[in-house]
Length: 195
Image (tube, rainbow, N blue to C red):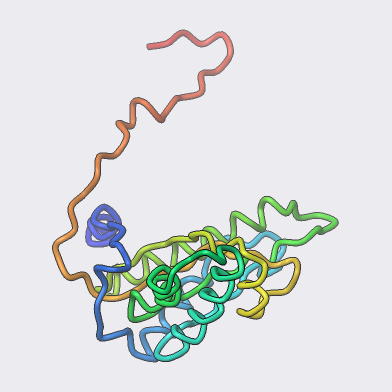
């Protein structure tokens, strides 16, 4: 178990522009998705799904992003549009985690949304465990209906994140983390005296 703890302690986000190939193999992608789907899911609703963007599919999806960008910003120049076209081609593999949260008689939508977030985090951790680097992002196009429609999302579905996966071009540097003393409290029993 210590190896798993060290693995968790060493995870870092890597910018998509710093991720290179080769992309994960088909077997690795299946492993990534299998692990991503092993999350708490109250009521076994499976309130999430995955869209895999690899190879040329990254550029095909990029055309939808570029088209939405041009519609939103008609004054954009060719260089700006080209950047948008490459959004999902910056890393060798991108997997979208789609939240399918919906009203339910028993299971709050919030729990379903959290389950999708857990799937995205498991995907990031699985990539790290397999020796890849990853970055979980949304960016503007995750909230743009024209892009969501082009990617095949239903009206009630939302992007929980685009997880960019590849190999890091450099040794990641850790960023400052909040001291546990600033983010942790211990609930005291009523009438109990602090030690």
